[in-house]
Length: 302
Image 1 (cartoon, rainbow, N blue to C red):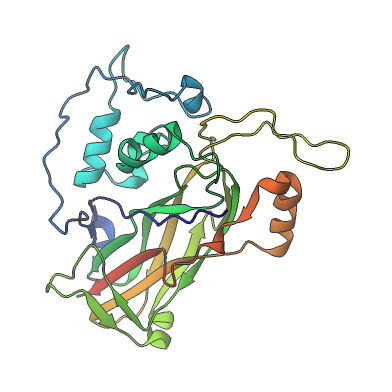
Image 2: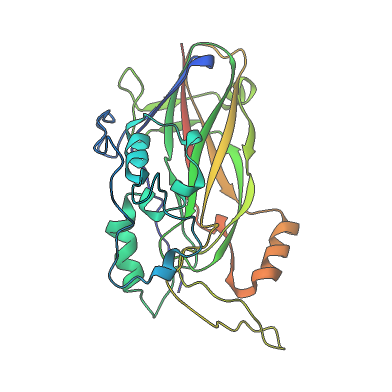
């Protein structure tokens, strides 16, 4: 049975790219402005929490939980600063964003699922994007980067092949944020936006998201059948990726615009390679469609 799971919308972000006079912001799910208060102003003597029912092996493939000196960790301070907008995602390395605790839903949704995993069904595919929405305010033409995270959703057992492509929409509505004038909806001329507001690169644009549960030691019998030697709650080292999108504005008139990133199937050659390598554990990630862009950038040109 396939278990479809919703994408997850993330918390606030505010970043200033002064060289290009670009302001990016994203509000919290409640719609309130992102807080500038850091609840962890200094490093805390805090290890990774112990989750009853999850063995230490669950996190074995991940980077070591970040530490400064000895027992001091700055993980929660970095997470809070990211959510409040003090630190842009571009400054945060995989030691932080590969930890499931970096995502607010882990303790609330991920841990209960992984501790009491439904044995009669499994999440064969599921993807989450964080943050899923930005607003950029620009005052001149040029290029600027936007980063977001994409990960396997809690409980997903398969390797998911993904390709990211630009997506332009005639109409779009923000779910978390609003433009400076308080509006959320736009209608735009797609042909005009394609010409004057472009995604020039997405890196990586074709990749594999690895499982977030039920890690298999992969082997096959002489007939090519998968032999699962071990199953356990287990975050693979490639369960999450940071994506960088480069946007170029050229001759863009003052106004409000939207440009998105969507998920499609990998190239046939790449998908065939992954399908052969992972056999019954490979899934084309684009099987779960939202009917709209997974990542949305709304642009205000002053």
